[in-house]
Length: 376
Ligand SMILES: *Cc1c(COP(=O)(O)O)cnc(C)c1O
Image (cartoon, rainbow, N blue to C red; front, side, top):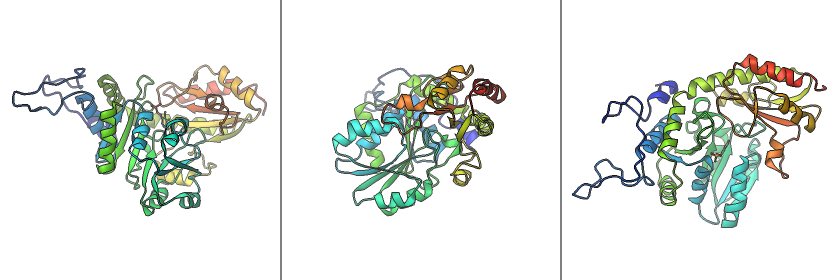
């Protein structure tokens, strides 16, 4: 079955108790025990498991083609639980432009706790190979990257990780399961901030980790989640599953509009460079064609005139809301350097765009008016 069909049907059918076509939300925190001490429905207490979470996890596992999935209360909680399953003294590799929050988590929690971290440019395979150590347990990759839209070769990095007896985790939030299949390329785990495209409406926080095999490391991550309580609420699970049903058609339209916008900006005299893997001029365009089904709904661009003018362009836009985050129905624009703070590597003249579901030509017209008086 194709992914569009799976996205509608995976993880739920008609409710057998009521005939409801869409799943009920089970808010109960506790479940009845039978006189013989058994729990015939399999649920005991909602931190351990809940029908809405189980349904969402089934859908996530099917969408990514993994044996098992764990739904979390945020993308960061998914990252945290995977790292907590390691031991102090273990080593991991992370990419130079890994999600900002992942860097924060490593610096403030996990390096003090005893993890060893090497930051590498994962677009350079020889750097990855040289950085692997006997105690490397995880190679963490993220593609496309934020906010520079660099691509990492998932299969090649996974092969290097496996040769060194390390696992490979791919943060595939920006690509979604529609555009990129990390587990099929050999990765051991896929993670998502379901806050973004899977939820899809900027109204629910969530995360997911999907394991290719339900091995002891998976069991450990599950144990950390359920004993520590990094679980999403039943309503949040329900919202994310509702979002998944329309994921394929949302992503399809967002990709089409993003390509049209990137093409428009690339030809605009006020723009220095557009970062979008769908453009033939993008340094990883060939890899993008091999590794992704389409090129995604995220792009960034640099304004020739500089930082002040870039901020002014964002201020003039009518249809793009100035806000962080991505993957929702409304288009967002963000001056990344100022949100990332003083140690940022992001160019000051860069704006990042999350393309929404407005008409693509309307979005282009808005960009055209905002850029009209900016010098080239
Ligand atoms: C947003 C995001 C995260 C973190 O997710 P939260 O739900 O905000 O904790 C992780 N990785 C990427 C690529 C993201 O965009």
